[in-house]
Structures are given as C-alpha cells and as structure tokens.
Length: 499
Image (cartoon, rainbow, N blue to C red):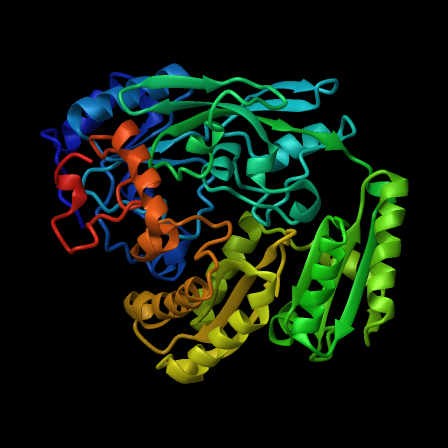
C-alpha cells in the first residue's frame, strides 16, 4: 500500500469530482469500490470477499473527452492516483488500486460508434464500446475488425488498445497494434491529443505506440480508429490434427508461417492442455488447430498449404465440424465468469495462465524448462491437476507460449495468490527471460510482472522511463503498473517524488 500524496481526503475527493460530472456518474458505493480495487488476477480472493488493498475513493464515469480532461486536470493539481479502466477484463493486476484514495476512471459510458467507413475501411468508436457490439455492427455490413480475444463479449475498445490486446485470428490480422489507425487520448493535466488517421507516414517515430500498450500508466484513451476487413465466413476451412510430439506440432506452425501462409487461427496444444479443450477427441495427444479464411482463392491456397505441411508428418485427422464447434464456444462472457465464481467457491480449484513469447529455435527448450522447474521446484507441485501450454499467436521469427496451470487449493483463500499463483507466474517469466524471450506476450505487465521490467527492457528501459518522466512527471497515472513502485536499488517508492 502506498500513502496518498494528496491533501484531499475521501469525502473532499468525491465532492470535487461531483462538481465536474453529473452526480450519478460519481460512484461511492462501498461494495462497488471494493470490487473496483482488484482485477481478475485476484479473482479467487475477490470471490471470497477478500479485498486487502486500499479501497478507491470513487469511481467516475465520464461521458465525453472534455470530462476526462477535467478529471485529469484535477488529478494532477491535487496529486490523485488514477486507475483507468473500461471493460474490466484485465488479468495482470493493472486495475488494482495500490495507492490510498485512488480514483478509478471508468470509460464504459463513452460507448458510441462514431463512424464506419466502408471505402477507407476504417471504424471509429469511443473507448467504452464493447468489441462484440462493434463487431456485430460491422458484420451486419459485411465487415469485421479481425480482432477476437476470448474476452470479446465484454472487453471494450479502450482497454484492448491500452493493453496491446491480441485476438484468436492474429496470425492473419495481427494484434491490436496492427489494427489501430489513429486515436485520441488525454494525458495528465487534461492535455487532449489526437493522432490522425493515415495509411502510413514517415514523419518521425510512430507516436501511436506511446499510447498503445501504455496500460493507463501514461494517459487515458478516449477514442480509437481501427482498420476493418471483408467478412467472408462462407470461405472458412477448419482443420484439426493429432500429433505425438509437441515440438513437432509447433514446428508445423513454424513451417506454415515462415513459408508465407497466414491461417487466421494457428494453434498447437500440448497433450496436457489439449485434454481440457478437446477431451472428446484428443486421446492424450498434442492437438493442432488451424483455420483458413479470407477471399476464396486465398483460403483455398492456405488450405492446400496446410494439407501439404501435414502430409509428411505422422498424424491423425480431426473432423472439421468438431473444430468449428469448439471454436464457436471458446469466448467467455459474464455467464462463464459467473460459472467460474460458483466453481471456485464449491471446489477450491482454480486455473490461471501466463503468456510469454520466444524465438522459434527456443520453443521446445522453454516448454521443457518451465515444466521441469515447476515439477521439481514448486513446493505445492502435488496440488497441480494440469500443467501444459499452447502456441496461439505466431510470427515470422517466433511464437508465444501460453502456459496453463490448474490446481487444487489447500490453504486459506487469502494465501492462494502467494502460495500458488505468484511462484508459478515467476518461474515462467524467469525462464522466458533466460532464453531471450519476452516476459509477456499480450496480457500486459500489470502490477505483477514489474519486478522483471528492467530485465525485460535492458538498456532500452531508458526510453520507457523517459516516457513516464515526460508525460506523467507527477506520477498520478496507475501507480505500480509497468513502472515499479520502488527503484531497483530498493530505495523509497518512486511516487514519493517526481519521476
């Protein structure tokens, strides 16, 4: 917990905010504030009603960019910590409040789709537009964003951009950073900036990336313009293969991608991970899932390449219908979150993930190293009911590994995070960094991977730290996210002084 540096106390903060917004848009309900103090990283303690961090002073729901600017002007003047959020689906602690009397800046009321341009192939929407709503609107016009994270039913556009989100079709369409054309954001002090929509430019560094992935540690995203694509599901071709060897399954993806093909879905599951997704057909084998899509000649060419890659590999085919049915039920919305909460209370059992990235040549080594360390070093290894991984996003130079671990919880609910989640997460991060990979592929740094952020960036930390000093010198934006609260030498919390 970090003490507030503001001279304002809780009641005064709420009064000052109410003067800037409609009274109904400043929330001080105690239970709402408690729930807003965490995200899904602490889902197990939260479902047991345990909220140990500082509880925010208020949740504010602005309805315009001008109101966001007023809030951030007040925050800078009065040194109030701001935690930005939209859909609330974060998984790495980025939405946790670690400073007393924090203000949670919730953009979900800014939910207008502003423009759909089928000639220039762009859609513009405010930060609080749910991705599912935008996607449904586009599909009715024969278009798509190409973005489909599992959280699509409830995730909102601002948060997706702020965390460098990626979707299940990324091998074809790219991550959110490949889709963003332009955007609007508000910086501390109420400075509104707009990056215009152009196909490409060479007018200095690509300043979109100051905002994309900032996780609310630099600014608040209010509006986003993304590319759109033709929606042609009638051309989709689904493929599933069972293989005996996980490295061979990943190598099949490598061959396809480095040969220049881009299946929209491009996944390889270890046998352990496959059991929970494909129990009705995996038969303790590794599973490869592929989807070819796009214009029919392109989908057909990709399908032919998939067939050729597997022609020379020992495998068993999976009926395409089973792959399509699995994929149609992959996303999770509030119904699945509610079911997970009930299961956690009834069974004291939990599943988490840690996603990292690595070069093709180190994938097998990373997988083996992580599994070996967890099995031999993790003190509660006997409580694991599943430990596996899958590759789900691939590139010319490498792929991600999405480690998945389930366990029975044999401790008090408050201790689960330190007894299980944190040590497991640490082993995976450490091994990815040791092998030259990235400690995080797409969920963001949040507040639980900051201990490794200097190691992640090395000498390039100078650049990242410079952004914080330039754009948030008072340190009011999402303290502890991306930027550690304490300096590497163990000195005083950085937020006690200026950046």
